[in-house]
Length: 456
Image 1 (cartoon, rainbow, N blue to C red):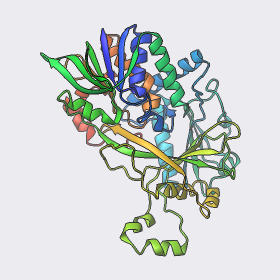
Image 2: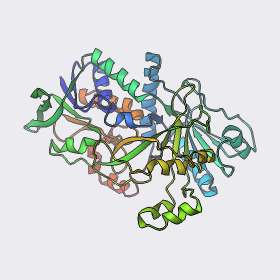
Image 3: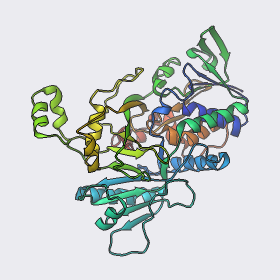
Image 4: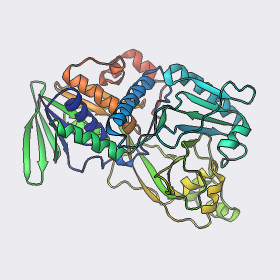
């Protein structure tokens, strides 16, 4: 079987790994005009979680499987990609949001994400175990909900005094996406996969079946015979589908990531990913506020911003770097390279995070422009991926992995490889098929769903 994969991001590489290493396919060709993992995969926060809302338990089971595979890979490789399980911590100072956080935690726990342990100060059946800085074995799963103010201050002394609840989801953390991808690619190549630099320019379909793939390279073009053709084009997925005459139901959002040096040591280095779950009004001095209010172009900076500002430590012992993120504009847009971020983005994110970490205010008086990069989330309308066969015989898709491509890659690649080779499919496979949109019952379900489901 000759398999051609369009795209050498984490999705394409994971597909190649499972096809070669796990399913024994020897003729697998990855095609990308850029170096591997450099379009979108290296622009992420590199985090993972099994903490996913419904409807249903599909995404929890899918992510649990992917994390199982990541842990197996970490064991086998000596943890060459630095997997940890520090968790995600969701914080709120709003009593209504604290109740909502509790209700959501009970619901997600019931979907299979693990037990919920509530620490409210009234009873002490178990102690809260802080996140370990390294490793992933022997640590809690499920989540810990801290409702006791004294306990919150003890473990998170840098957060504001009005913080009412901290939900620490435990089967979560981060890793090195580049080293994970490099390891998967090396293993795939050792089992027969090849990587070529080039751009797919067309696909020949004969009698409804894929036959050849056209690839443009520096020294000319070539036609490659394909028994199976896999679209793993990331934010270019829609364009890749158009070559097959398909209009895939996906769109892109631009998400930024800021590298910020916490040279003052405002936050500890052992933290989980920290997420502020309340809307935020940016802090401004009176003179700054008056100046911003003078123009329609800047007045929006005075309005409340949505919840979701978050950060995590980056680097090992002695490092000072924080990764800061906050997507407050989520309008669909066509991808361009390099992506363009508004000049005020870094300052807005830093100001927003002072609500969760007041100590960061120290940086506002002598603000240094931080390093900003990012990439596009390719998404479906309900923020679930597309994995499986397409209407053109012999063609497949692994995409619309939104901002969770790194964490989902192992289960997504396994599922794609099972489709291509005819192996046994997991019971969540139908949930990610393109054909799900043809189901009238699913269309009804979509009416109460949106593209931000499960997104930070």
